[in-house]
Length: 83
Image 1 (cartoon, rainbow, N blue to C red):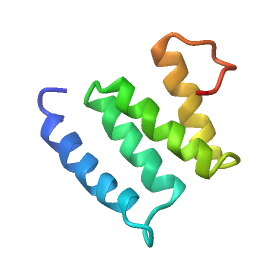
Image 2: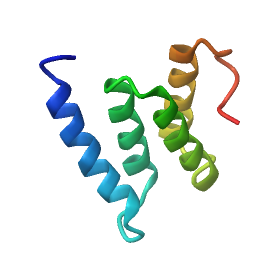
Image 3: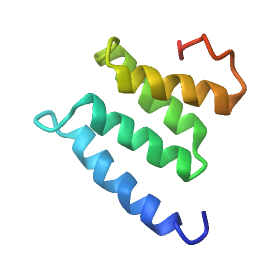
């Protein structure tokens, strides 16, 4: 993480920008932001991003899969999506 920290932070900024502009917001841009947050050790922020993605794109397979992974990392039930 120490070596990749700067790259994860740079990736976060890119995905955050994409997710914040209506014309470039997509499930993948929000998931990218959440994954970047996870790599930076910011689990609450990743949960917030994925919650936003679940509200906007409840059927997207990338959103659902990453929500399940986050639940596993957080120690939640693997069948429980973020509510």
